[in-house]
Length: 85
View (spheres, rainbow, N blue to C red):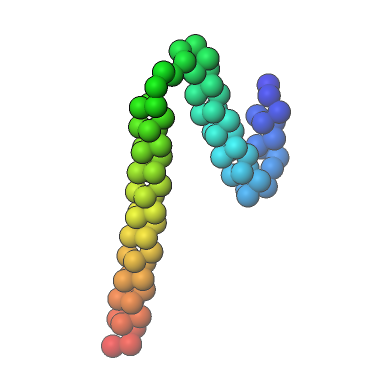
């Protein structure tokens, strides 16, 4: 068993969340590294496509978070309005 498998059950929740995100990022990095070592990229187009996908995902995540924030504010306004009737 790896050290990360042993660390999750005994770690506090916030540390466990950090471990999870670090492990997921390391796995993604490892997959990319192995693929680039086995089949090197030629040209600039794959990098541009990857960068565009990353930027798009960042914007979509930001918009989802903003939409959730706005919906929460609307919900709180409705609840507060109903309480004062």
